[in-house]
Length: 130
Image 1: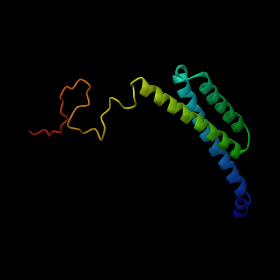
Image 2: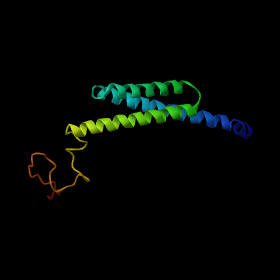
Image 3: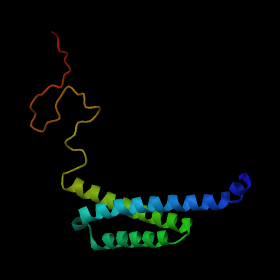
Image 4: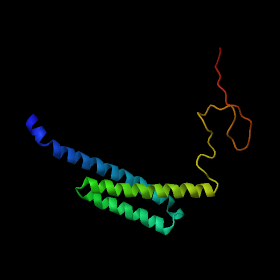
């Protein structure tokens, strides 16, 4: 039995690497397509086309048996996805809706309110005594 396991170890390793590459590719394609659908109207045609072609390349690579080709296509899609994220962040910053603009910094236990109205609300802890 150990002999059989040793003789198939290389094949098992190749199949595992292929499965992991396919899973990573599927996750990245799903996430990228979701973001692309949500923000398609904010992208220029060239950026959208580049992302869509990267997604198509990943899908073609995952249909094959070459884990290296899948990993290469995933890296290209990651770069396109990073460009998409950067574009979205810059667009949000230009429109004044920067990331985390209304959230307080730190651990949420500040003594001042992060309210844009300046309500002078104090965050405090208390104990109930009876």
